[in-house]
Image (cartoon, rainbow, N blue to C red; front, top):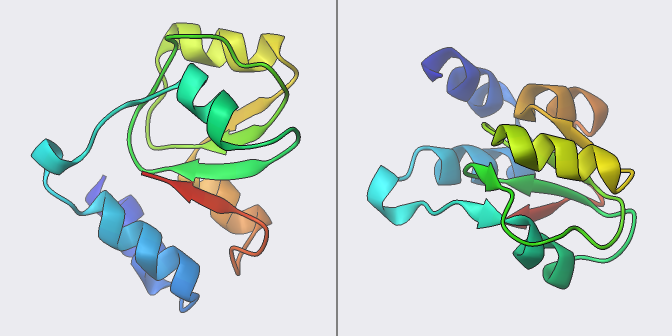
Length: 106
């Protein structure tokens, strides 16, 4: 995990610098994010970075691309069933190097 954080920190984009800060927070300050919360916070076909584990509580109402350091197994299945895509943060960083049109969910 430390190597991944170093890779994210090496990017000069303010977006990825902020993501790195959030990933380096204390575990006590981080919370898992449920699919129901993602479904209410972001619209269809959105692209988001979640700075903690994505959990499968609730239902994803529309497709979206989600990057996170960890997913529960049932969350990955639910995201795929809704027509979305679950990926690692490094993969998102390659596809969106500046962070444009990507939202951060804390």
